[in-house]
Structures are given as structure tokens and as C-alpha cells.
Image (cartoon, one colour):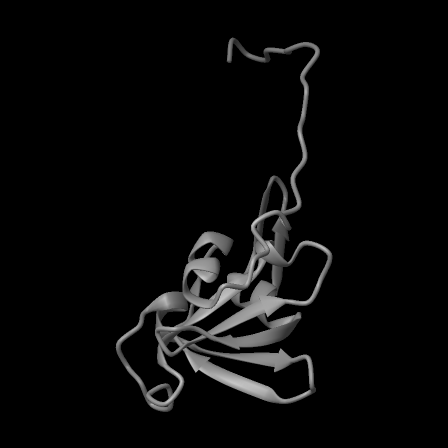
Length: 120
């Protein structure tokens, strides 16, 4: 879901999570890790609330306000996780050994001048 009303813009985090396909990994902790299948996979990593065995009906994690998100996996299966957290590649690597720490999309911006309006 996107909301645009100039000059404000908002994009739902749930929407960002659910529009992609994911690789599923199980960490040493037993947690489910989802890594986006895209050129910059480290930008979209999610982790389950509990171990894979305890996930159904688990009520303890409050990522995405405790909502259940639906993820499409690379094999076409659908996985629902309640309250997953968006996380980072360092945490993924520590728990799974899967290394995508150099797979972020980054860019730089260089300003050549500044303009002030109304004294601001």
C-alpha cells in the first residue's frame, strides 16, 4: 500500500516485505530467516519470532505490531509468520553462517549548493 499526498509520502513496511520472494534458512537458534531474492538481498531480511517448531500460533514477538505477514518462498510455497522482525545481515550471518554482508544497495549524494527559503 502506498499513500501519496504531497508533500507527504508513506509506504507500508508490510507491503515492502510481502511483494518479494524469499530464500528460507533455519538458524542455529532454530529461528526462521527469510532473505529476499534480489540483487541487494541484505536490504530485506526478516526473522521469525521463535524456532521453526514453535512458530504456529506464537504470540510473543511484536514486529509489525504482531501482525501475521505472508511470504512467498523461492519454491512457490507460502509461509505465514506472526510478528517477524526486519533485521540485518550481521545477525543473519551470526545465526546461519549465510554471508550477504556486502549485498546492500547504497548510494551517495553530493550537494553542490544550498538554497534557503523564508529564512529557513
